[in-house]
Length: 97
Image 1 (cartoon, rainbow, N blue to C red):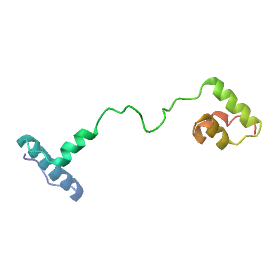
Image 2: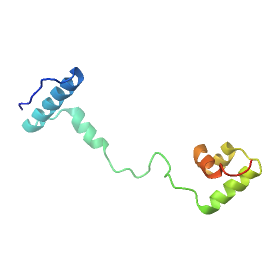
Image 3: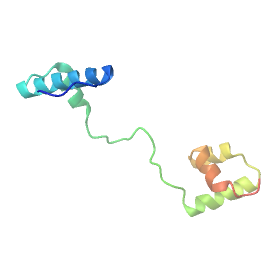
Image 4: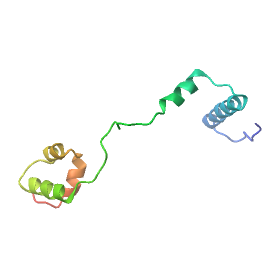
């Protein structure tokens, strides 16, 4: 592979050389164990590591606002509904505390 390497920063030159080496290996059909192992790691995820980020329903928002208006802390409301504190704060910030 012939390319113009003039004017590249040192880290860009290093990245380019690594990319060129990988390209040459792929062209020749050479594969190391690390590459084969990484390809096996990309399986279908059946159980995500974090819960889905679904917005609260209107009923949950009403319940959050009622709890906040009655003096419950944002932290305890977030724990009760399984939402992040900032989500609860965003939906209850107009409520009286």
